[in-house]
Image 1: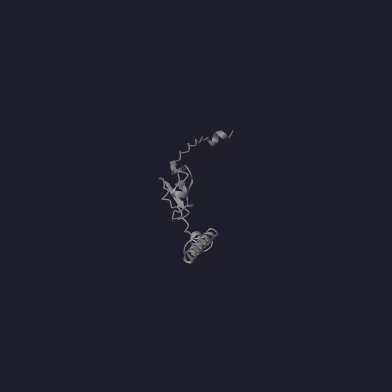
Image 2 (image 1 turned 90 degrees about the vertical axis):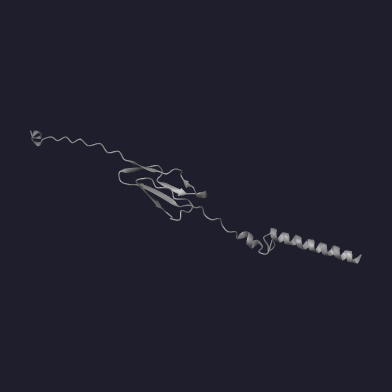
Length: 128
């Protein structure tokens, strides 16, 4: 009978130790595996999103704030002389690798200004 009592005592001791380890893990202590809480708090940060090339319409140029095209990169558009930008002048690389706002701007040809009509009056008629 004495052996059984010792066996029961050993089981109780093991259960208490396991309970203490669980409490340590819950409180951020050293429990929860060989690395403990340090392994849980030093998880690698997710890699930043990357966008593809934002597009460059005909008769335009695009300037990028970061050639790596990572999240937060700004694409700024401008048009050649004689063309005007139609659409957003700036787009930003956002989460999930998408440019916002959607849609690539384009450069439309500027209408020619109307010809000014010059009326010439002979100088002799102006003198009176």
